[in-house]
Length: 91
Image (cartoon, rainbow, N blue to C red):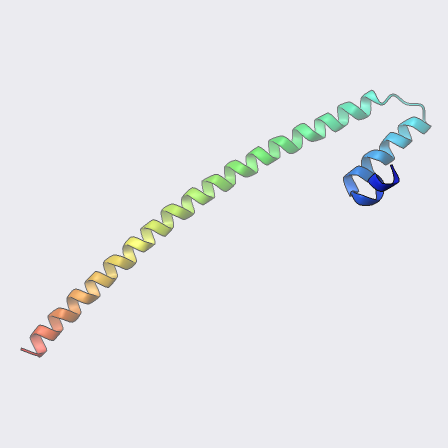
């Protein structure tokens, strides 16, 4: 138990709560419910973060494709203009 306390801050926190309940002779059921609620809350927040990440990734990929197309179009326009100038100035 000491290794759990030293190795992980959440483990230490949970072990301290368990010890407090044991010393106070309180039921551990409340602690179990509280831990389950924390786990559920973390799961919901993780799912939301993953959805947000996926949405931002999709937007980023769309933006990259759009900018790549714009750059390609600009390069084509530059090449066409360069060729036109060469044909006009150097007959």
